[in-house]
Length: 263
Image (cartoon, rainbow, N blue to C red):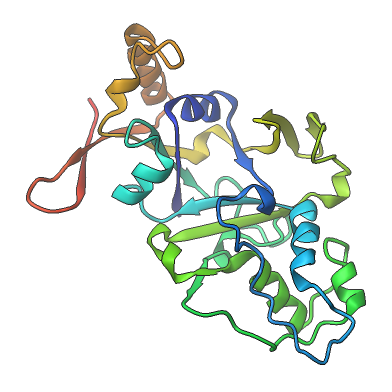
C-alpha cells in the first residue's frame, strides 16, 4: 500500500538521498488540541489534570503523519510549500510500517478518527496505568482506547488531511528532547529549528513515487534550493532509482489537480 508525505523540495531531496523519513513528537505538531481527547471518568478523582499527560505521550513516542491523497490542493498549500514542494509516495509495507511488533501503532491501525465533539468521561484509567505510559505494559480495552485517543482523535475540521499515522516508542532510547543528536536505536536524531526530528531508515525501494508541485519551478535557481542543472540531474537520478516522477497541474474544468508522468 502506498501512502504519501507532503514536504519541501529540499526535504524530498534529503529523504531520498538518505532513505529515511522523519518522525516527530506530539508537542511539535501544529494542532494545539493533539492528545487532549482523553475523556476520563469523573470518579477517577486522583487524575486532576489529564491534559498534563500529553507530555508523557509526546516524550515517549514519535509519530509519522502520512496521507492517502497526493493531489489534495489544500494539503499542497499547507504542507507542500504552497505547491512549490514535493509529495513522496511510500510503500508502507516495504518500509516496515505495517509490523505490529516494530510499531506501537502500525499504519493499518493508524487512521485518524475525526469527530465534531469530544467524548467525555468514558475512560476508566487508574493513575498507575497513566504513569506507565511508554513502558512495557499490556493494553486492556481501556488502555488501548487511551492510546487511540492520544494519537488518533482529531477535530472534524482536519478531515481534509485524510491522515494515517505510524507511531513508534522512543522513550526507552533515553534521548533528550532539548539537546540529543546522532544515533539512538533505529533512529538518527537531527535538530530542525531547535526541535528533534527522529529520522528512521527505510529501504530505498520503498520510495515508489514523487509528485512535483505545480509551482515547483519557482524553487529552481533560488540560492536556498537547487539550480536548473542540479534540478534536472536530481529528477533524472530519482527516475534512475525506479521512482515514478509525476508533475502536478491544474484541471481547469474542475477544482481538482491533475498529474502526468514526467518523461
